[in-house]
Image (cartoon, rainbow, N blue to C red; front, side, top):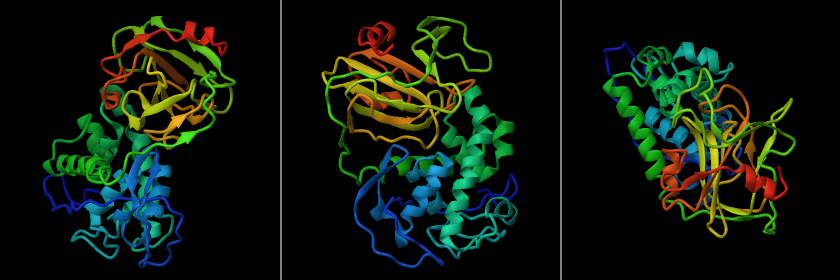
Length: 360
């Protein structure tokens, strides 16, 4: 986080590491603990736990679930802040793995010891989660990635992000965000083999994407809802469902291979895309609750497999599932992380397909 005034820049340690999820108990100041060189998935993102020192990977994994932020980003952030040194203190008083200033620690440390890795990483998750919530209006109004905005808020302060209506024009902050995002995705994802497991029995059956929900909005022309960003003109490229009362569970509508499992993309929020096993259809499930993803890219899932929890992330006014379908499969599914329309595939009305399959 930013430790100085607006015009005084401190060097940032940017030697990036990564995280894991094996359930290892870490007490005291962390200590040294053996780790398996395995790849795991948290918040839909695959990364290698062997890169995490001292057995701290599970702590980062848990914090990522609280924050709704991919675990590799939190780990890269810790490396940038402290170089994985829980005893480091900055000249202006920031301390511990996550380099908390005393005032911020008083709000998020919950009475813990800032030099204790378990306490510091948990507080990092709480603070990043609070920043995500606080800065979502900026993300929604500008279309900027909420994860990048939260990182900028951690470094420069959320007020600077709000007053700049985006990442502030500070060289330190922009370098901080770019380095963490780049290294989290490339350096620590590349060390993992291709992911992919088969979940459930592949029967060819279909399911309602949000069981127990109410159909709330159809495909086609409609005014952009007040308070949301206009994306693609006044046309609704999918159909919406909402569950009365508590949030429902979003499930795979068909047997499919997961090609996108993306946490907190600016317009679609937390979302999943899957391609039918014959490659003829692509389905997307948007605005799920941050941190609720239950699948990862490369998985093959049967119809009815839980994907995540209905939420209100991204460019929305309230909790619901936005469901889209496309003819064909994207050549590069990563396009979906940039453009929810998946680039080169054609959007189609899902309603007659779901009615024809007897699930709507």
